Every structure is written in structure tokens, then in C-alpha cells.
Image (tube, rainbow, N blue to C red; front, side, top):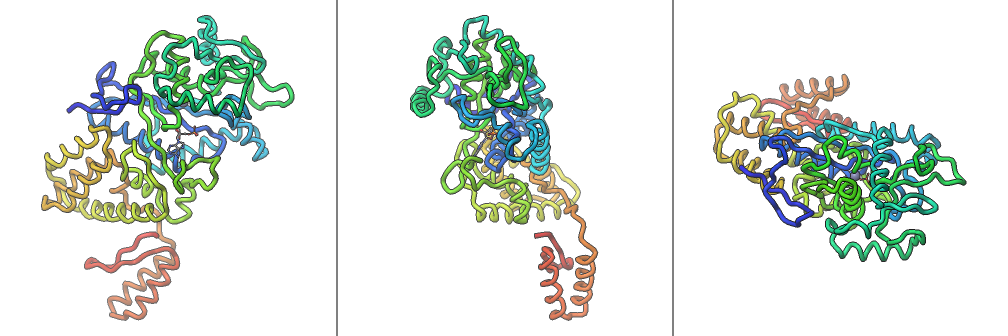
Length: 459
Ligand code: AMP
Ligand code: ZN
């Protein structure tokens, strides 16, 4: 069955056909590693993982490239302010290199906890300086960049159709923003730095020689250079959050197409924001939530993954602790049912349900509808073995940890209380069994009595 994906470039849902069937080249913008990523960032990564898994289910072979931004992303979108890496370094009294290593590791650990399949290529901007310098040299040879006192800038007026991805309404926003942060040497407010010179008054941790002077690459050039290195000058899909449409991705296109004269990306796909208190969750807004915060409040990161799947990726999603609690309960119910079904021998899957599940994903990744098929399956009168086969198949895309037994071992103290409680119940000493339940509860172990005996889970 064909798969339809919304393309930001054409503003339409279109049948997706890769350049070289069945291979799909996919580039996703990775984290800026100067701080922890927040769950808003992870909404975008969960969407990208859903895309990858849905394409795999549909029979494509995805080659996924993700970058790590470890240099050049400035605190201001207008190429002013400080490099976020240097800000992180000053904040923690470490070198920018140490900051990058630490937050890259933290990111990868979170990705694992969220069941995000690792990319085939994970590339650091700082490992690809020659590629970026090479791309800038090509732009220079074509007369597309000019020099100012603080760097080399892309002359956006010389690239026809510069605003194609973002639409002209965004250009006005950039022009208005430029009034506040006026860089008087820029020829136009939309022009952007491809290379910045190191400041004379401040020593940077990260800087390189280049034909134009010592400095560091602008943020956007890394993605154009690395995407083309690993996926070719034209490739299938490029993703990120919607905040990247007006500046970062628009500039990536100008750099790549300005240098090659060929179309850069065929499908642009963007995830809508995760909101907190009605505003985009952002590090600068304060009050952001990390995966570690989720864990500290007793949530499994996969509860958050479930929460993400309850909304279509092109709709904004509110983050509240109450909604996360709801996601946690739903995931627990699904997981309990799945583990029960695992006791049954697998039987052929129900073709109709499977078709509905696949059709939902092939309709621009309609995850809420796919989840609804899962609940339909559990409520249905299908034989348990067929339910099991369907859920196992659905799990390859939803990746909610449905068939993973609790691996966290019980402490010896909890084990003792549980066996004492089992004994008390067999002796019908309900007062003692209630007392022991309360003691287990205080240890974060919730006990439930079922026909098969007491069952426990961690809170
Ligand atoms: P950054 O580390 O800021 O470069 O962002 C990493 C990814 O997270 C990018 O694709 C952003 O577009 C995305 N992102 C940032 N904030 C949010 C948010 N509140 N909701 C969804 N995606 C976001
Ligand atoms: Zn990027």
C-alpha cells in the first residue's frame, strides 16, 4: 500500500516514493549538546522514530543520519550572542569539549530509555570542519557569500526562492526581529553567517583555521555539509521541529542548493511543539522537564512515549503531569494485557486489524488511530493467540516496552515482605496482609490481589 506523508515544502500530503526504492535517506537534526534535552525536544525525536519504524513496516530500508551540534549554535537566531557550547562551558566551569561529551552521552542514554532506534550515522559538527569549509568555499566561488567584520555571510538575495520553505509571512517576522538585533553590516535581515571569526577579546575553546581567518562554522552549514556527505546531494526526507522551518532549514536549502544547483531534500517533515503552560517548552523559557525529571516522579520514559503517540505529530500537544499520569495508566494496562497474552501460543494475526493499523500509519503517521486499533484488538473477541500476534507486530512500531518483563529486581526487604504477605493471606490474616501492603507501598511497590495470587509492580 502506498504511504502518504505531509511535505512542508508543498504543504500537501503526498504519496511518498523514494529516489532509489526501497532505500530511504533520512536526515534528522540532532541536539545542541550544551544542556540536557527536554521532553519537548524528545517529542520531535519520538516522531522521527515513529517515521522510521513506520517506513520499515511499510517495507522500506531506512538509512538514518543524525547530527550532534557541538559548535556554532548561537544564543541569538540573528548570528549574534554567544555560542551555546561556550555558554555551557562557562556555566559549569568545564571546557566546551567536556560539555559536548557529557551532554551527548546524556542524550544517547535518554534515547535508549525512550526506545528510539539509533541512527545509522551519528555525526558531530566538530568532526566535519573540512566538509563545512569545503561547502563554504563552493558558495564563495559562486559569489553567494560576502565578508563582514565578524564573519562570512550568505547573500540570500542572490538565491532565488529563498523563502520557499517558510513562506513569505515568516520573512516579515525575521525583518521585524532584525530591528531589535541590528547587525548593520548584513545586506539583508535574512542573511546568515556561514563562518564566524573568533572574537578578539575572548578565548574560545573551539576554533579552527580557515581560508577566511580563524573561527568556527555557523550553525546551519553543518547540517547541509553532513547530510550531503552521508546521503548525497539530493535525498529523500529531512525532519526537525517546526521551529526549524523559518531559519535553520530554510538556510540549509539555500546553502546546499546554492552550491550544487540540485534539489536538496524531497520531503521536509516537521513535528509540532510540545507546550507547557500554553507556550512552547524551551530551555530559555525555564520550567522545562527532562527525562530524569520523569524518572524522579516515578514515570517510565515510555509513559511519555505513549503520551506523544496519543496526538498526531502535526498537532500541538500539551504537557501536564495529569495527562502523563493518564498515559502511564493506559500503558500499564496495555503492558499487563500483553504479558498475559505472551502465555498463549501465537496464532495467525487478524488481517483486518493489521490492515487498519498499517493504514493509519501510512496516512501521514496517524499514531492515535494506530493506538486505537490496539485497544480495539484487546476488546475484540479474537482468540488470544491472534491478539498476541497483532500486538507483537504493533509493538515493532509503537515500541512501548509492552512485552518487557519488569527487570528491576526487588530488594531483599521487599521480597521478605511479599512472601510474608503471601503467607498471611493464605492464613486469612487480612489485618496483617493489609499492614504488609502499606509497608510495601512505602517502598514504592504496589500490590494487587488476583485469582492467580498477589501481583506487584513498581510505582
Ligand atoms: P535543539 O537542541 O534546540 O537544536 O532542538 C532539538 C530538536 O527539538 C529540534 O528538532 C527542535 O525543533 C525540537 N524542539 C525544540 N523545542 C521543541 C518543543 N517544545 N516541541 C517539539 N520539538 C521541539
Ligand atoms: Zn539541522
